[in-house]
Image 1 (cartoon, rainbow, N blue to C red):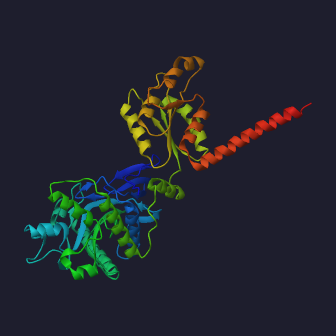
Image 2: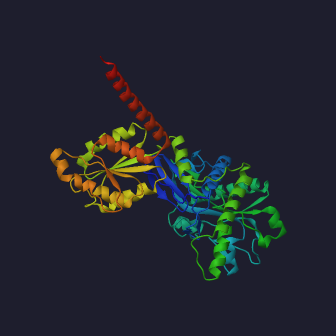
Length: 462
């Protein structure tokens, strides 16, 4: 099964890539959040993704956001397809509000080593692994590359938030935990611990990120806990953490997961999602990149293809616009760039990487004359079609400089065309999009019919 390790599109401004989610600007008040299949454990992203994980996280987050609006408003506008969500732009509060109902995970590991205070919360003596606390405890952490415990007094002293805001976040977190506990208990699931994140929208406190997902929470089957509390199996990311800890105990430190761990993690994520939401998940797509673009196109957020036109100089703008006008007439997105293979090679390499990583079909057109290193640099580094279309001023310019576009080094497959219309059509055909192939077929047939009609007219003329 395929995974979406990273989402990318030249059509939207990427604001942030987190451990799991990628964020894009839609407008000043709205962003798009795409949940990938990346998996982080112990503050690092593993090389192996979990198929369908992003869809599970999005479905669960949307389910809980709707269910808890009566407790606190959240940033969700609406879900886009299977793994994306439109949200209100919020100023994040850099604190994770961790609520624990049981002594397990990192808190148990610390307790076993003699620690009796977590984030300023004292713990009683005599507890055993997976014991339930008499009441849930709140143990906030910082939201950094490496999350660290922090007490409420330290939060206020460091100026992260003021005391009234913290008290409100604490109260809301405990209410959310109570609601989650009650709903999950009715489905035979224990909410072991979880984290909540908050932000400000127009000065108002709202819930953001995710809520009660197997990435942010621990779940146990109530029946298994009742049978053997000390050895209950995790229904969440703790399954992967447990495997990693066993590997580390033998001196290994893996950054990738074996197939059997991936398969079992996928099963557990999907099962907990279906139990909580009481709805079946669709099959995991064979090509999640294509599915994501189809969903974003259906929502009107992007086009189904994009052509980047890279100019060697701003003076090439008029020539580039001739190409762009034709491309846009086929309802394909166009992005204009200025970069020089000689003066800003790092920018050229970045463009090649960005278009190569895109989820949607892409092509590049290089608009540069004289010593045309631009098209060659793009073609040598990009995995998408590259077409040279130099902006020749006249026949003399053409004769003097055409060879710099035609003569590309080995493994530098840049095609060259002189006419802007042909450059546009070459880029469009390079996208290999079904609807465009159908349109081109119709256009070719229409052209043939026109020639045949003209020939017939001439033959019938006395």
